[in-house]
Length: 281
Image 1: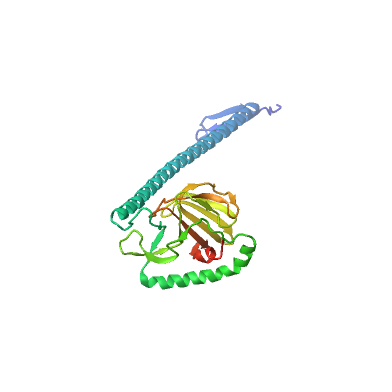
Image 2: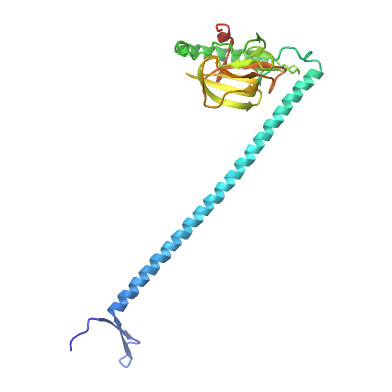
């Protein structure tokens, strides 16, 4: 009898006894292959669905985390803005209290102020030594910067030199001693302020102590700062030329009256601006 290869035969015995019944099943090969193919498709579909669910869950988790971080950033930004408002109010109140107490006798008195670092008298000598070392390190770049027009030798505003670089008494009274990081130039409210040298504007806006501030990078680690402004006429990342108009004198921030706080920094460390002003135009 010829065998039929269209089927698979399966024999099942219930027990090892001779009298046990033996069952025989035949399954068509074509049906078995079709069933296996369908099972394979169902397995692939299940795996793909599971993968899609995991990706969707990961995406949802990322979206939730991003939203949480965005909310935290907004809260921190709001707290920072509120802190700046409070600092501005404190600085304004300090100025008014000083005026009422007679520490600032007349509104026409020369304006001074600017950011200040509390300083003990015995530590001032060490700070001066640090400044001298920094100025010596600047001399290596001085010639190249001056030749390229990047040395700030132009007076930023027409006015009278007032509170200078270094140690001074607190202009708002109290008997404390502080370090003044720039040179105050007395000028009228609204007087034009110009760039001391060519460079790129790296900061515009409010900064505690400085009030409305412009920072210009002249290259070679040399930057200048123009504080207490009433008006700013440049934008961040803008290139400016030597003597270009950048803003107007004001009395914003920690200030006793209208003046310009002018600051020169090398590698973000303040140096005495007088060495440039006295040799400039």
